[in-house]
Each structure stands twice: as C-alpha cells, then as structure tokens.
Length: 241
Image (cartoon, rainbow, N blue to C red; front, side):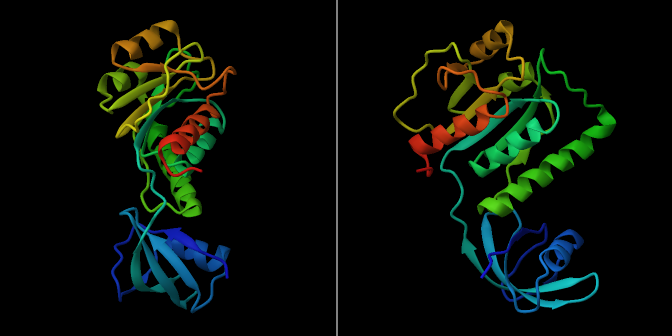
C-alpha cells in the first residue's frame, strides 16, 4: 500500500475530523486520487506525524479523521544553519531541497560580492513562499515533521556577524582545518556563490569566528556543496549511514 504524507498548517487533534486546507485537499483528492478510507499521514511542522484516514470527499473539499499521533524519527541530531549565497536559475532551489532532505534546520539566503541575482522587494514575499513550498515538499518526501526555517535574504557580512552556533564553518577549498572528533551541538555553515567568496569575505567570516573547511581536492558547485557537507556531517555525527 502506498504511503501518503502531506503537510497541513492546521491544528491536529486525536479523534477530530477536519476539513483539509484547499491545497492539501486538492493534492490528496485530485492529484493522488485518494478514496474514502485511504490512510494518510499528516504533519503541521510541530514535530509529530499524525495517522489519519480519508473520511469523505466532495467536489472541492476533503475531510480526514485524525486517529493518533506518533513521533517522527527523521530529524538530524545537530542543529545546522546554512548560509547559502544566492544563485541563478533553479540551482538555489535544488540546493535547499537537498539540504532539507539531509536535515538542515535553518536556511538564510545570502547576498555577496559575486552574487549576480536581483531580488526586488516587491518579489521577495513570492520568492520566500516559493522556497517554503520547496522545503515543505522535501519534508513530505523524506519523512521530516519539522520544517526548516527560511529566513529573509541577508548580506553576508550581517549574517556572519550574527552567527551564534557552537561551530562555524566557511567552505574554502584551500583550507586545512580538520574535522573535530566530537559532535558539536550546532553548526553555522557558510557557502559562497558560483564565483566563490572573495578573500575579503573569507577574512570577514574568519574574523567572526568561522573556520575554513575543505571538502576535498575538487572545487564543488554552489548547489553541490551543501549536500556534500551535510552528508559528511550526517555520516560522522548523525544518522546517515
């Protein structure tokens, strides 16, 4: 039997019958063609999975019975805040999707000297909503019940100055910092744009307490680097094996 897992922003309570929000109702009823009695797992971002079943379906509405809550087991053990410089096309979207699948906790899009992306203020809300849809879809697919927070874009200097994690890293293919043996409680991870960070930006991050991190002998693309870094972290200290 297929496993259907959907996000809804609604409050969920055992024993209740709720009408799903229009987006979830359309996806479940029209796209997935669910029928009355079909099982479905819902989550609302608060950390629990809710076992439900489709109660009834009407033309534009769908109700589900909320049966019970269960713990979700897909959260990474280390809080990771990704500061990722913006990139053109769908590269940034792809990067945050994969970062979500690999357990990132927070994401801040960054402007830097070599970022060639314009984001007018009148388009910001739409772009933030698009990024949120991407990470919600990734959570639905991978089993996470908490949604990574997508912060409004910041300039790199402001983000590194506000970083407060136990371990701060900036990706630099010329660095020589060794991976620590003990797992940190939290990580701030800075990744540059397609053209890389400037020497001045790396120095700025270093002054703010960031250490250079080298992932190997090859220079990775900005959309590849988050997945590689988070995958290694998960393998060393988390639940990736």
